[in-house]
Image (cartoon, rainbow, N blue to C red; front, side, top):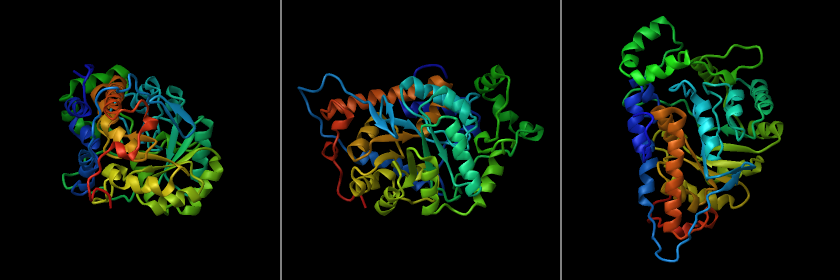
Length: 386
């Protein structure tokens, strides 16, 4: 089943649930508190409607665009998500799928695979970083990204360490020692395909985050790195400007939800922003990302590239976000479910499904290219935006 083609992102989610141990699947769900923002990120797209054209429609639809200095074959970038050890190849599999689709990946600084391995699988790499460990350590990681030939930097600012969930957070061990293996053995044995995949690679899930290690240091465990992050004072505007100056290349500020913050990113010299609420995996009852996109896009105009993340589940969602001002979208849950469902082929399947959906939506709104999309291609109901 894991290797068979599927026709939708929700089906990828169902297959990931069948394929993964219970705790591993739960780690992919995200959300916080009651999950209000997580749910609204998805459902808000249903409030946006198309008015279809008929006859004289374009024969072909062009999806290619550029972002952060890179040409991509479709307006979908694979967003940073940490600890993808739900599959033996983790971020390397995701990078390979993105490369095959002709698009970029933004591996997390909390990734399960070193940035160098991910870059080898896909040269269109935008390395993500948090402000973790103070100025010198952050800048040292920037240099590591440069040496790995990352094409751009993603600076994520919207994390508040609030991950309490009414449905309970999955148990994740500090390390996979004998006690942890005994605890999780019943879950793993109930998923023979998952177990077989790891056995065929001759390894066990690695719960370290190697991209956060500096030269000569052992990779920290996920929770050790998380504790370092929690004890680091938050980034300031000056910090962001310093990062941009030290990087001296394209960089994106991720987590923008207000027009005034978008304008500050412009002032800091950012190349791009991502309108995002961290997938609802943060302080709950934040607005859905798509609800604030139009005002932010209008506020910055052509001064900066606007990307979008939050709730993308189908190609029509991509087209709606582009019509309301995004240059491209960033997906996370969708490709993680593909990874859990079928590894690299599952991620490829998700991207193919989105590509086909984008084609269909472009045809319906009579656009030969994603660059022809405009706000009047979408019907926005009264009260949708704040």
